[in-house]
Amino acid sequence: MMKKVLFAAAMMATFGVNMASASNATVNDMNLMAQVVNQDPYKAIEVDKLPQAVKDALAKDFKEMSIKAAYVKETEEAKTYKVTLVNADAETIEVLFNEKGEVLPAEEQI
Image (cartoon, rainbow, N blue to C red; front, side, top):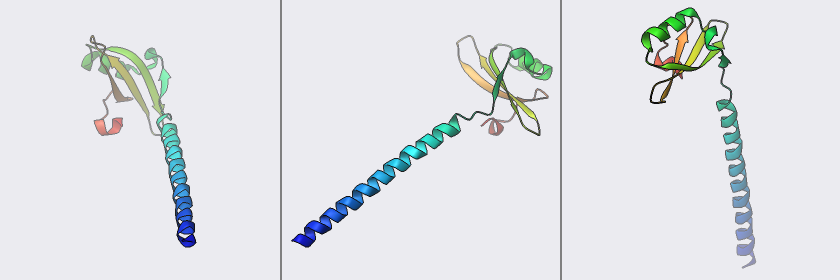
């Protein structure tokens, strides 16, 4: 009988430690995910700082929308511009442009 009680106590202690470790890992994983999400490489800029090519593309292809915000991401290779647009129904979209005013394909906008 004593062996069963000790075995049960050992199992409970092991199970409790494993659950605590698992919950700590989950909390740590969530903190890491929050840090990754908050590391947006784009920096806010004034709309008038957008290159003329981007402004021209916006005027031509998104004339029914207004610019809500503009951002830039600079790398050694190039600059990418993210523009948040809003329509008359207050719906917003974000569009990425290269320095030449070309809209970047959807897979590059992630």
